[in-house]
Image 1 (cartoon, rainbow, N blue to C red):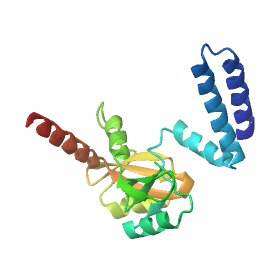
Image 2: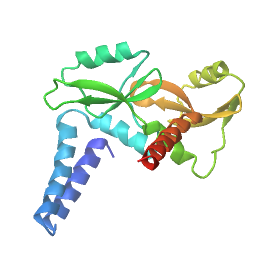
Image 3: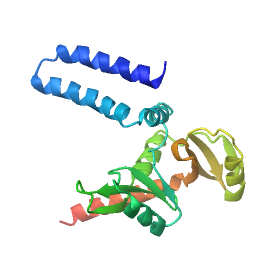
Length: 200
């Protein structure tokens, strides 16, 4: 079944259930979902939506729409966008950032994002997952990862005794490796907030 068939099937399902909605608010919610699918279809984003669904099903880390080596490159890209995305994530030097833009598109910025930190924290809440490959150096890990013709969306590996997450962003054909230790930044921010709250 193609993505177009699936979208049509879901729209029909939503339409039937909208008829039996108990309140005007529920009917509006069904209509919103139907319109969202029409938006995907009519804006030529059905294949992109299909790719997004594959990421969701593979339980991949938060999706990014672009990757840059430097903040200057990212700022130049954002300035050149006639219709900048809002609340989408990008990588800058393998750090997550979220794109923020005003409705009139006059203001746009890039802010650090903690989505991956929360993602890894959730992965490790019951202990460290097993690593599928072990390397002594980052160079060895990079060579292994780059040598894969069709990598998984994510793979837990170990480099020099530390767990890392090797992530393949299929939508932009980008590979990145993140140390699990980035979760410590999240813990440090929480601790600061607790200390600030206790000091009031």
